[in-house]
Length: 198
Image 1: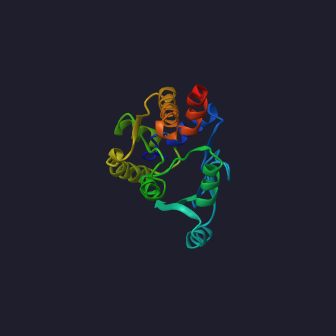
Image 2: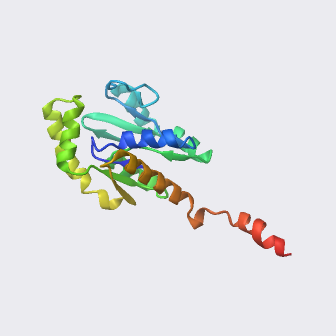
Image 3: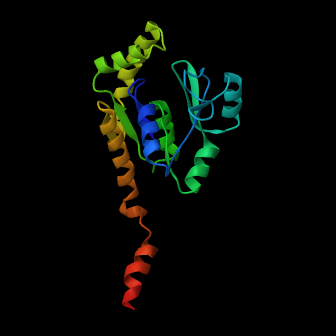
């Protein structure tokens, strides 16, 4: 699970990592906001209206959901669990509210917080996108301070100052997670090392 304040680059980091690692899968969230330029329905988000989203909430279709900057976002439970059952490592960009909810159900997941180099850099990124009016940028910056306070609840923190470096660090987190002792099958060790002694 990758979280960050709006504009810190979590979506870009996830996209870059997915391009490098075809063995990863991406959990596509549902969203009630309008698509931004270049976003593709079903790839970046599944875009639905608020009525459809609320119907899905009531049906229990989301592993988590939250209202962020006036829009609703949610992680589809079935798609996420199918990817996990199939044995894939799943990368998911998610806001801090959603990450809090996910910890209750997916405590074994790895949680990564992405920081911008500074608040000044974040302000420049948000203003430079040109997608939001100044009042929305100010609100996103105010909320960013609240979100940054939660970094200590995560397993890893990456400062996204140089994109290539940050992508490499995110890839390292995933590779390190795969190498944990508790994920090694003891039967494999027994078969490949100790049975040969008999």
